[in-house]
Length: 433
Image 1 (cartoon, rainbow, N blue to C red):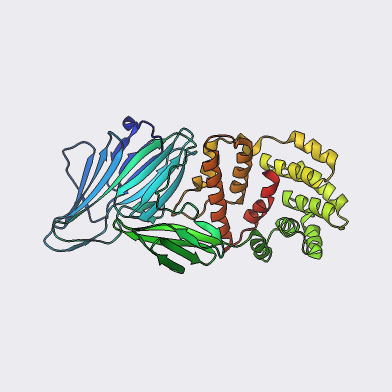
Image 2 (cartoon, rainbow, N blue to C red; image 1 turned 120 degrees about the horizontal axis):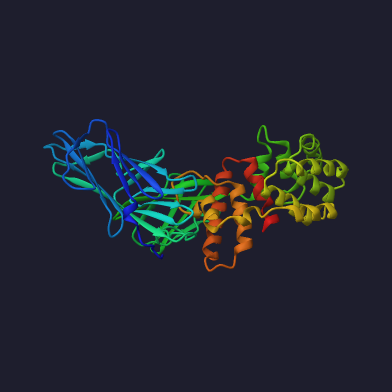
């Protein structure tokens, strides 16, 4: 992992009654102490102090060299055991193009922030972070400190070139989202594994973990403490598609596409006929694509209706990626070759025009995180499309792994709560790769 030179001169610090604000190039830390704490004087630059009178003190230090580092310390100054709440950090990315991927997992913690110019990784070197809305606590709470006992947290900033995927800790399973029924093999020697709803079989060489479909927290307990790693299992796309089709209120256009594009082939022509009839009354790209498949793969008499709907949709407000999807599907399915060729010449670059950094940011770098999935089927498929056009780079293997991981994680989530749009895009994935 090649680090860039840090730029400590770009840090801005400000403090008001409620927060200490540290603004870096890519993210702003708003650090707040509990309401009962009071500001205390400090005779050092980049050092801010608080006290809970007669009980404890806290301080935050910003180090600017050799690398930017934020240190948080809490000390029990009283004569009795103290139960305390420590500082909380609210995070805000700087600029509209920055994307943050947080992992607040106890004894391990990282924040990856992607900007157009670079990738910044904040790494916890001491502490025990816990995720909260829009931020984290630097310690697991409540803090229980003996008289004279202190606790500290350290977060260090590292800067990487753009499109570089930060290396995860070596003990984190590289492949952690698996098809249902396939055990997760964890090679470790110094950690115990536990997890609610997980079956863990441990031997002298490692552990085998199995669980239900969905996303789960696997806890690693070792000398550093406890760290949480998200793992998961997913059903087949065919099974997820079947579950999606019974969702109440499913868009008829999406329903028609799911029926027509089922990985097992068109299973229910009558259901497809009914869905298409409703979809083509108010068509979208999904309904038109379903109609193309119906016109070429079944005996349904829908050719004229699909042709009319296709022209209406094409003249509408489609995005470049949707136009590319329509044109590609028309070519692949052999539908109306002249019209398909005309469309193919008219489509824009779409996802192929993204930078590698934008592509990776859209899928959260495929990184381990404690945030719920923010990428959808569209993001995964467009990332795959981007890879097909830029797969010759020396970094392509890592990029492809990131996309594979993001797709598998989404499949785990969809195996529990299906979403019509996400599944529709995943069914379209073969068209663009």
